[in-house]
Length: 334
Ligand code: KG4
Ligand code: ZN
Image (cartoon, rainbow, N blue to C red):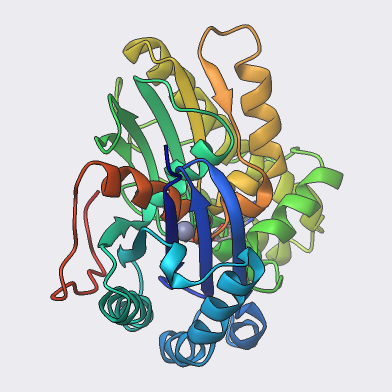
């Protein structure tokens, strides 16, 4: 039987990425061109700058991916691209590149949901066993997603305000740390002590939803009050206390959902999945549990195209096809 080779393109935010995946599970090549340096001095991603970088980079990254793989478009069975959610101008660059490529080489095209991509990053590590639960924690999303089969996504809980990554980035900014702040807080938290009593938003009994805006405000108030009283708060202790609160809520709700839904696997997904505190707490929580915990390597947690090609392979094999009318959908639902 012939291999299935899918080329993935991801441009939803600030990484221009192209990857080629064999049979939905094996990385042939995975190239990520990051723009973080260009956005840093603005303290966040500037949409116009992101679009311009994608336009400049996308053809180079495409050529590099094919060259690294020792392939031409003739070897590729399908082109998969992120069609949403994300920044509309940024998404459009990837969608148009994918359409041009598919049209010029007469290849099928599939549109992939960015969060489905984050979840499918796990398939590059372990074969998926259903039903499974995915904890998705990124800059734009915090969700518990139940999957009973490939391509079926049921959101059982989601954030009501800030996403986990957004909370990390905002708290980091308050502490004067550069963008993106998640990794800096993570590093500080590792050397600090969670001595400050910060709130945990459990919400109503039985709810799997999340809320992080109260916690973010509590951090800002704690800093403000300390300053007024002339007290010093060590940033590492504040980072550790903040991280302890976020991780506690994420892990507790995940464990509860795993028990309620009796899932076979738990997949961690999204940029915040790179968080060392979260990874360690999940590993500890699932030690004696029957459900298998899967955590992708750091490079597959943050935005990349391997995950888009992995999710796209399933859609391609299910016979799903995008058309030349494909558009970018900034607010696409999973
Ligand atoms: O999934 P992602 O790369 O982009 C989106 O789709 O949003 O996630 C980016 C987010 C940022 O908010 C970043 O601060 C956060 O992931 N992040 C982290 C860590 N590494 C990245 N947050 C906490 N700890 C980390 N180690
Ligand atoms: Zn992402």
